Length: 479
Image (cartoon, rainbow, N blue to C red; front, side):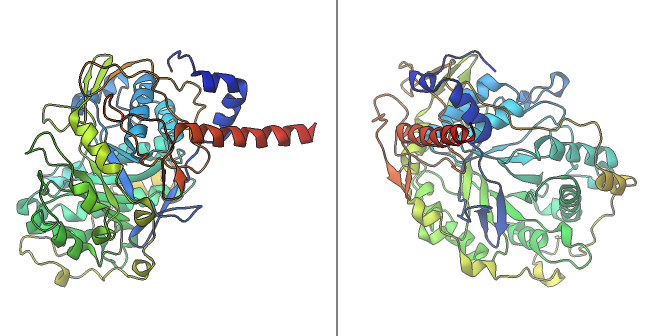
């Protein structure tokens, strides 16, 4: 972690804050209840307000040197502070090295009240889309299980993706569906035997309308003898809303109608069409409206500007510059009615998954056998006994909160000063705070209350101070 001078407010708390940060600021794990992700303690719904996070794209994953998006604490502190101000509560990270240490970054995002949805595959280790059988091996699954070991102890590990776009057209809908369920089964069995809690496992699907409904039915249906293989949730990578589209012109109404009978949470694992630039993100208002409460929110693609030009920020060496897209997205987030999107859908909990049957499949090219591949030899023993000699992550104290790396406003000239990570109190999840981050767009530290939760940094520190007072009172009582 970098050597960073704390802000005066934090400095005045001295060593007491270090004690506080060591024992609090932990988000509660999330569980699945019907169509909803739900806080396991408060029972409040978690609607995903998130961003896909993979600085450097595939090139940011460097297992030879144990580097990935969650290995540099200084970078994570900077980005967590920016994302916290943006208002997100979840990031998705695609390519991670299970042999690397992620304690600093996971703890920083946890302190910020931000969950992580993690892909277990990498560009070099995944089920082969064109020929899945030879790639489904003990060695591959050992890598998948190592991901569980690395991230199972972080309370902000929201979920794992067992696969991403393994089916991306009609041609890949024949052999591949059973392998999606096979990896899901293996992951769920390993978690059940070797993790301290249940962690949801699901699949991320390309928005290919010819096979979308069939894929969704295939991964969620109830298969006799293979109950572990059904997905706990369904992610959709959708870019159908471009520019100033509408609920109907984008086809969002069709998706809402399709997923209203879902027995598992459905959310956009990627969204944010860039055919019109800068992006204005008017789909945010629709996604988090009464019309779409069936769905569980979504993750905007993506945080950093890469070759495909979907970025919210520009990253250059030690300098980061917010883009107009960032400002526009933040403005849309700030309009959200959190009391609406955090309300659970009690009627959906009673829905039961349909029995797996070929009648669920409409495409003649889609797999209808529902025959899930047997586990490779030796995998059952690994599941039973656990994978030995792995890097097992744990939360660590987040002491530094001030961002030392340069961050510039979307005008490209104004350097943002005083950017800090706000360590949230126990059980707090980050939410849009009614602020603008770029200079000249109404930046403010004033209190904004949405959904009954105070969003100002000052109030969060007040809550932290109150908690510290309680700690001290208990300590004094014991003397």
